Amino acid sequence: MGLIEHPTNSTSDRVIGAAIEVHRQLGPGLLESSYHACLRRELELRKISHRSQLVLPLEYKGVEIAKSYVIDFLIEDRLVVEIKSVDKLLPIHSAQLQTYMRLQGVSAGLLMNFNVPALPRGIKRILY
Image (cartoon, rainbow, N blue to C red; front, side):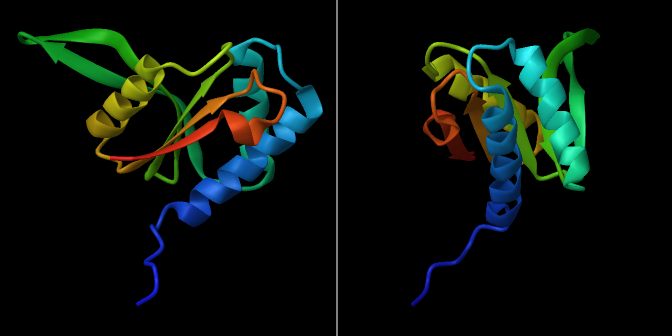
């Protein structure tokens, strides 16, 4: 029996391709905001449907807490992408992405660290 492909594999592969192009052009060592702006442009050029800097409301004891959670990218309403530019990805980064996925009701996510020599080594796929 063959493997069943997860529906977000094709989408995540396209996003990874866009991110690799950004990394190829810029290299490591820049601020996260620079990678975010350039990845947003690359997604637009590739006509990949996305929302950027998506604010997720948090309600606490009847009060909405403004800008508690901000997703870097929501791709095609089914893939959360969180970007970093850090020395190394930590468990807290994965936990952050999983929280965003859960709050948004999305089952797949990509955690991308642009501060690496080769971007594929800085990418972690997460299924929730």
